[in-house]
Amino acid sequence: MLPLVVRELAEGRRVAVAVLFEFEFASGTQRFTDREGYLTVDGHEWLGLGQLLSVSGLEQSVKMSAPQATFMLSGVDAFLVSVAANGSYEATGRPCAVYLQFLTEAGTSLDSKIAIWAGVMDTPRMSARLGQQAISLTAETLFVDRVRAPWGLQTDTDQQARWPGDRGFEFAPSLLFKTVNWLRA
Image (cartoon, rainbow, N blue to C red; front, side, top):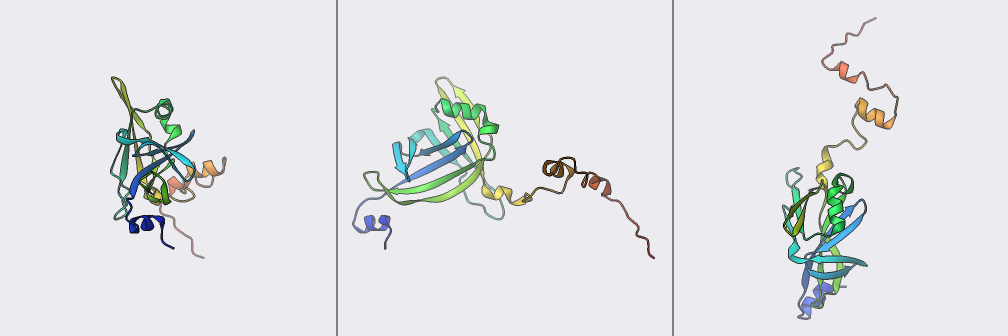
C-alpha cells in the first residue's frame, strides 16, 4: 500500500510540508509550526508562528559531535515568558523535537509526522525590545549524553546521591598517584 503522500503526488495534486516543533517543558508540552494559524496533527494542536519562529544550527551529529540548535520565538505569550523566567526548572535537560508533516493543499495531514531532529533543551534566554519580546532557546542533540556514565560516576558525590551515608568512595581521591606495595609470603 502506497503512502498517502505518494498517492497525492501520483494523482497530480500538490503536497505541502509543515515543520513542527515540540518542546516538553516541565509545566506542559508546547507545539509550534512554521505555518500560519493552527494545525491539527495526531490529535494535537500545533500553533502556527509563521515568521515569528526561526531556527539555526539544526543539523545531525557528525564525527561524534553534539551540534547545538537555536530556536528563536518572537511575539511570545505569557506562558512562554514564565518558561523563560523559570528556565532552569522548566526547560533545562528536557526533550524537544522537530518533525516534518506532509499536508494536502487544504491543510489536512498526510501520513504520520516524520522526526528529523531530537535534542535536549538548555536554559532559555529572554530579550525584550520596545513592544516585542523574544525567547532564545538552545538545544543539543541527544548525542550530548554519550560521555555520561549511565548510572553515574564512581565518585563520593555520586555515591552519596545513591546511598546517603555510604563511605565506600570517600577515600578514592587519596589513592591518586599512590604506590601500594604488596607483601609476598
